[in-house]
Image 1 (cartoon, rainbow, N blue to C red):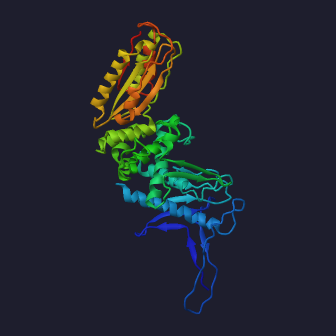
Image 2 (tube, helix red, strand yellow):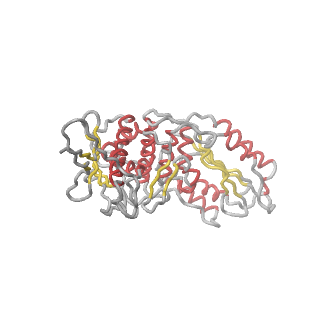
Length: 454
């Protein structure tokens, strides 16, 4: 009597076990599947163990869909491993232990660092057995734990909310990016999309290429989607037609090099490292990666470059004296955080009626001269423009985080007086309050105020 046993394991050509998938019980048995028994007196035999992918979410035993999920998990993790060893300076020589058991009741996928184990959700509300993005994301946490910086505090996180912690955001954002990069190497034509299919048949997907444009209020160093979009833009090819700030594409190697380089991975002391986007950007610069205007533009359009602790807003009706004092109080916080290699220039322009004519024209001339002088700075200049007038206390954003003159010249030349009241020169316009608002999310740059008021 003969039969075949197939175990949920994948090995490399050196005889190293890359991944195995087991149940979630205390025994932790590797999944294995047996063929039917055949008797033979000799000759050839055929063992048909075709796996059925017709999955019924209401019946975990439907067909052999469970078998298909087990091997889909193993293949996805194997693709993670292949990508790592094709694009990293450190060879990944550890084995991934993955738990998956339909009906066990794990409603979320996660990595457990104490046991170095990955658990793939089995339902009933969310079965991740088909969700390559999810399980490959968790494998990157495993890799980060063994070879990366790995100082995330963990906790609740989502593409669509800011975490409040830059290390958690970067850890989750890098894992979001990594699964797409690994799927791209494996030939997935939709690799830029992070997908998560729910048991009920719903699909949650996020396009890393368009996340910044679709979610402008989330473009922050505290958001995992913004981090993932930044890393994806640095990797993929330039797309100036559909994304005017995406004019570079360095491939996958630079991102992976930094992930394990001591400049990022061991940036602190033996007790603590700092594993956020600021340290990653500094490592990018210090290890000789292209610290250029185009790189800065791709970074800024995704994360908005938001120094932590610099998120105040001017109070309505605030006095000139109070605004000046508060603006000065904000500066030490801003200067003490963050990192960038590019410059930053912010213009704040009074568009009260009294500014119409030569005054406003003069302001536009100065701004255009500065733009022409700085536009081709090889490391880049982050240009920002806001307007205000004596009728209110809130600035109007004309543009932020722009690096290319061809995108903003028309907006500068289009500045015009906008207030309805024609007050004499010297009216109170709360210029310092406007400056304070413009300083939000800025650090270590230059700011020019154009006004005839006080």
